[in-house]
Length: 570
Image (cartoon, rainbow, N blue to C red; front, side, top):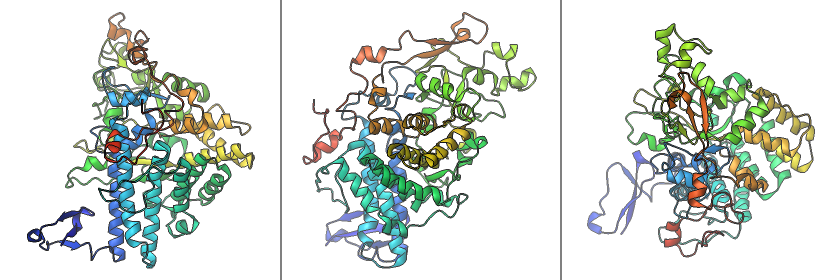
């Protein structure tokens, strides 16, 4: 006889044995035959599903948060850099679009999303026939969570197996018939009847409503799936429900700099975040947090002094590995479109002069205190700016600021407190504007929501008519580092924008660090910028291949029923 137990304190951890002498009732556990019965059981199972999503979206990697890594590194708007060109190999493989089928980030994403599907399927399958109203609501919420993970799988791998029941280790499912079939599964599994059971966010000020799989999240997921199918009219209808619900709002321009930090958690603009509440008594906390991503994307500590003055947002964040720098292409596009004085430009990226002269350093205290602006002291200060002649690798002179870790994101023991950010209302508005442009309907309303993004940004560019080109540009600028750019270019068929990925990795240094000036003067060094293309030859987007990630080698090795995506069998 075989029994499986569910430890109450740990959620859904299954332990089994087949020997009768070990078949002894354990204290503090409930037999699976007695579980999955009550609303309390269903809520515990749903909580475990949320926990699995948070854990899997971070993934069992030392550094990267997988949900950010997979959808940002392959884009054309950032450099995956580090200390030098031999650093962060897996990340660079994605950035240069030269990844093999055993890339660790891709493998972890695929398995992590399916672990999340498994946890949601436990809730759905065990309680699907229960007619208790509270349980029916919990099942509906689990379906939204499952749809979120399947959206990642459909976009990333095209034809992942459609799995509606918890799989045993011996099961070997086959590919879905098509990407459209997976998208239809997402759309149909969160139909209107299902979403009617799911709680709606109470108001834009309802922080808890940003942390649950709400009706607004369900409509957003469904709309994105429809857009990938080319059903822009259907997507527009779903997005309109989110907009007219009145449950979400853009935050004011003055709050943009805090939106991606702890003080912005649960803000009216967030449609969905995975909420993190730090408890020092819980071991392994960072596996449910953002892993080492905040340090990985922070400014490179060996290359540049972090502003460490008492009032600096970066005080106590001197650790950093420099794996996320704005690409020259993105930074110049943002400045050209918005102007240097826009709130969005200031919240997204910083210039070298701003780093040198507009941010407080501890050395200011010895020279009259911090005051913004260039002074002779700051121009010659050896403890600010770039600190080594080699400068900052993979850097064009613009510093990432949008999601840079700040002291507000840390506890005293360096525990990272940043929520895992999934969907923002700005994306809902931009998707709606695109659907209006794609269908040629409600152009005035589409322009209105597009303008609301531009006006909040403080951009000097305010569209006077709704065009697809205007929406595309605004989406690139507004949703930077939020996992949209790479996906959008594939969906739009604009993959020519990715042709130069991996062909340009400049460095940024300083004449003072080089020893040729006593003042800080930034220098763009392009002497070895093409090293990656020179070394690997084939970099950049390949049509017919990079529209999808490869199914992991480890999956193919144990499941012969999975057919590899095109271009990866060579």
